[in-house]
Image (cartoon, rainbow, N blue to C red; front, side, top):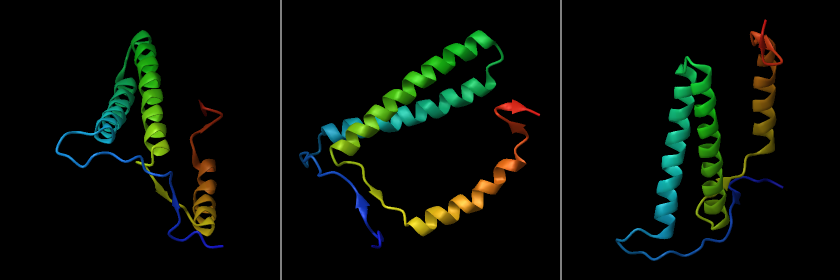
Length: 113
């Protein structure tokens, strides 16, 4: 069976087509904000020179990331977010292409060599 052009989605929850923001619009805006915030916290953690500050940013980052995931799951559940199914041969090809790169990493088991 070919999964070409196959969508992974749920039935859409209908929202009114009006100039006012709908639930979908609000959640989509929140999701975009959370994605931006997690990206910004990631940069801040990379630049934090004090361990205590890093730990605080990391905690906030994780909370923000969890919130982002919950919003994504809600949008997917309501049918407001969908995906194109990937073809198995393309997944296998990408896996083979990138799996050999791990031996080029300068660290093993999350420690620098």
